[in-house]
Length: 394
Ligand code: NAD
Ligand code: MG
Image 1 (cartoon, protein in one colour):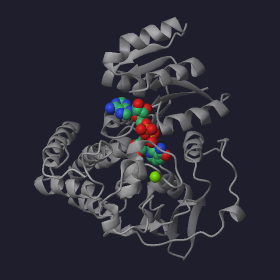
Image 2 (cartoon, helix red, strand yellow):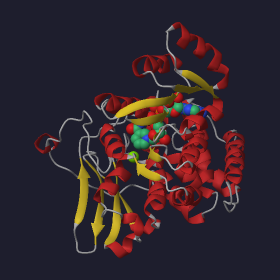
Image 3 (spheres, helix red, strand yellow):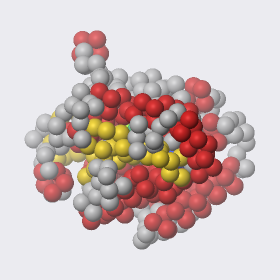
């Protein structure tokens, strides 16, 4: 039995992971879970899967412990960030699913890497923030890093086996094609985007996801973060990664080889596919996903992203090029901006403006250790919150 720790069990990726685990009970056991809000849902998960550990925020721990006892469950409660790190590094767990959203996932995800686990990475923000530090730790501790983000998982599936042993250019790879659905506002002009509401922004045409990534998909910051994620995962510069808008979300990304071959990974837009792939790799397990019906899918189309109306993609590319702490600053400013947008304190088109202002006001630092990342993350958040005051309310 393979023991799985699931960070962010109550989220969208968390739920999809639980579904895949439940379909493969002969191979996998849920060892530990974490939740942040919606602890009633975490209790339901504990009832159904009976994990050994549950990590919750410290102020909630006593009440949650009581609820578990009253339900007759033996799950032990761990508290706060230490609790997250404990379930990510426990010697009895082999697989860690990193499905916390945002910078909050960095510490436990990196701790799992440093414990040499098999890490299923959904929490792209952790890698975007820590880049080189993260990848060095993967090498040093011989962790197995498998992408769950559907695009990166698709690329992973289209690359030669053991691609990590040599630079991709030496393996006949010309470039990667990262697909984007274009989000709910594809084709909208910059002027039309001014009045966009949070309800419109979180209504993604193809994928059902958490609120933050849904807004990121609408601004194209999700693709910007994914571009940086791909640079680190596959050891490439952004020039070697082309973003292609593909509104049907049937092709999840492609690899272009120098002999003219282009390999694509396809399937219904359902995160259970990349989760199951990363769980079982190099084997295959059932994921509960409907087989792809190409006739029903109909025509597949492709277009260029509109970087003028959606400047977040450009900002992400610039931050990667600037290096050091710049991607962490970009990520922190984006998290503050998205939160403010969801609370109707910032307009949709002000999201990239706020991020640009934070990047403009900050000098990126070299990343020598985790401490500099955490302190720069805090500083960028404070700066972003202060800058919010300069923006007129939508
Ligand atoms: P979500 O909002 O549905 O769930 C987030 C999870 O993180 C929840 O379990 C929540 O309790 C936990 N969490 C939130 N803040 C926390 C904090 N401060 N401390 C500890 N835990 C906290 O998000 P999601 O859509 O499941 O996305 C999770 C991650 O996966 C994100 O990084 C996202 O970019 C990535 N991802 C998601 C999808 C998708 O389809 N949902 C696809 C690709 C990548
Ligand atoms: Mg993705």
